[in-house]
Length: 469
Image (cartoon, rainbow, N blue to C red; front, side, top):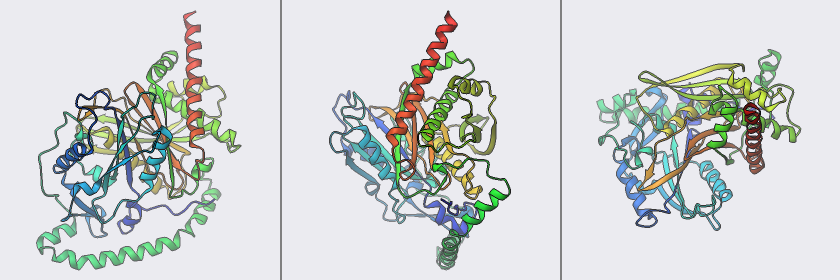
């Protein structure tokens, strides 16, 4: 199967082609079982969102790509903005188990946002009575947000500041538009915009038509030339082909106590090393069982968040998963000793002193999306891992503790499997997103991840016993 033409982020004329897909879906699960006043009502959550969104004017604006605007985008106040339109109330059918929840998340993410409204929505999902053994009364916020809103967000962001104890920034009714079209609008009382808009729209239509024609030609040229020039360094798997419009989403939850045991058995190993080792073993096993594992080592993107003075850096690297090494513990030892080939591909730096975990996920996903576009769709890695450090601070929403958070990143042609690792409430949640046509059995892959984690845990216990002896 040949790859489709990638979206060109660096060409603003094609921005409506690429930016329409730049959506992150954030998943947060809360425990309201011990609330003194009983379960929260939808109108309480809606009131909190409505109050909070007033402090974030960009969430009240229409986003539109424009070839003549700075960064290829303009913002216009939605005169008919109604926060309630963006907040929906749904419930899982009985019995409300984890499988039903995952299917609902995948469907919500795959559904496009209304382009005629500000590009965000929050789904309040109730009925999560059996997602875990003691989840009676749990509810979730499933938040779909365009990348443009997250990068323009102030301080810790609209979504995270919904939580108790976080103060939103001072209210501001305007969004400063420094684009060319914005300045012309101010100068001519929006007359300039009316003149420029038809030209902008015509250019977008012309380039989009060219895109549709070329997407059937460029993949063949790129595929064969990259092979002839020896540029294909990645062994193609099912996850390096075309994606469909349908998604699957799942989570493998691993207790931190087990990861701490593994770390203790392998000095120098961090949570990220252990996660990579589990991921590599599971992906290798999954492809071997389907007789699709090639002779070349599997490779993965690794995205980290680092503080650098007044800046926050998001680093993307490509590393070898050492799947040619047979023994599990040998691979982890190589990771811990930094003996694995790891090459930095790109860095995204933002000037900020603090951002929320959701913003970290969004920036990492944006960086990953950008790299895939820069590569013209030619796969650089077989999968990706977005790793967030442990979030130790207690977080509550109207008194209900946050028990889980993760996201559904946007997969692309050439990269149809992305993992996200978040740590909260004593667990590491290793979540994966894929195309439904590629990952036809997400429960099998989830169980493979669990088996790899348990296998490494047993190896660690045995190794610690030998060390004690």
